[in-house]
Length: 569
Image 1 (cartoon, rainbow, N blue to C red):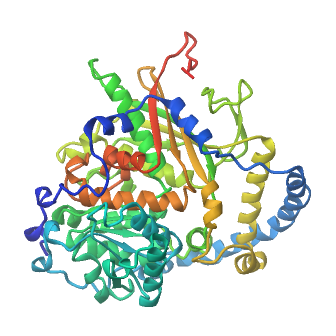
Image 2: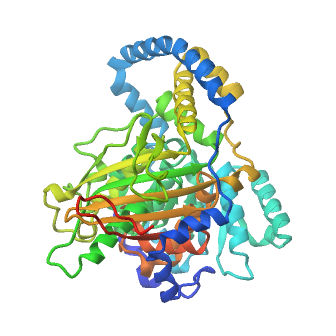
Image 3: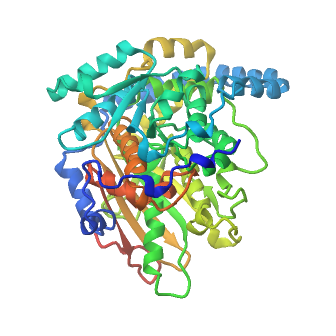
């Protein structure tokens, strides 16, 4: 079917209500183009943020008890996994078929007729929050209600989920925190069961954007994306499931273009901070080379993550079902869907992830990241593979590729981007404990004898997560160094003041939804389709994040004659 008949045009959107966000052009420019990296680091100190430091007792316990136990269990784990792979080797195709059925591949294909599609300007809600009663969804609802109260904002929004009782309980909590009983009447509820397509019409047909925190997304998100695409409804989510996102892209991108639906996944800690960071480093190189005959290209980027935060049961459940139990298996395609341009052709802009896989001491060259001349101990960041995938998608969708439907990129060394990501630790002690604990936990979860007690007694359950108090101590400081193909070196710093995986993920995904609902005229990419956060929202999203708690700065670094960094810090 053709869906273009009732497509909402960009000028149908009301840009007068900007949702409590100041859009003064001068102020916005200062926020997203700041060169004051010292101020970013200073804010971290003002907020009293500190990395976790482990005692000698924890270090010795890990070294003398944890590591030997891990090594004892390792042979059984390897034997079990090899046997499992051998037994399942001959049934991959059947397994893949069954997996796709459980990932909501639409055998139902409930029809959405063009006559049912309202222009976005006529829709009742600006955003609808799906999964509102889950751990991250609750934080998102609280953020929306507290940051955009009705006396300061005209946002029209609703919460959606399977249980009316739980939704009412959430509204009571919001009303209590704001001392505003009118919330019980002002915020609508929508009952949705994503396994029942007939309930999805009311979720997507009367809102400009859907914000989803309901995962695992391979299990609960596929029909939501399908209906958003068919109704021309914008969509953002908090998934870190790149395989699922690629599946959705390949199935629905063409129709999303027809219906003007922007579909932007990975709008939380996975992977907005890193995607926007690389986007801004590229932008800085482009600006500084605007007077030359050729634009300087970013060919290498190194990200240094200082992170403090917890983990929720929902995140663990997704990781277990996808990575360990392998209930979802990535589909195979002629080429990586993240290299596909909007016109369906293959981009020649490639990314190579060379992030470390073990403990490493790094000389970063950035004095405020580096520990004097001694360097910093680093470990692999567990989600760097997801971050690099999203950056790869943005790199493939170069500005000329994302907007030009008639050309593809040319292949040369300047089209290749090397990506490295490190999790910075205070000392070797913290690096060892962090790395060893991660490896030991993975070994235990991959072992049939230890995985069940781990899931039952040790790890948090879905719906559980860090306490409000612990999330206040959380933060993310992302420092990055970028290298241009003409020898220029640029640096950036990006600060998130709360637990990045939950409290600030809630803020990120809400602001992403509001960005699509209200800031269409400012978006760097026009029209529908599947985009990364940076390509789809760019500075418009960064402005929102900086006006609601983040700090960002980037600048060029002078170099010495030997090519080493000469940071201004």
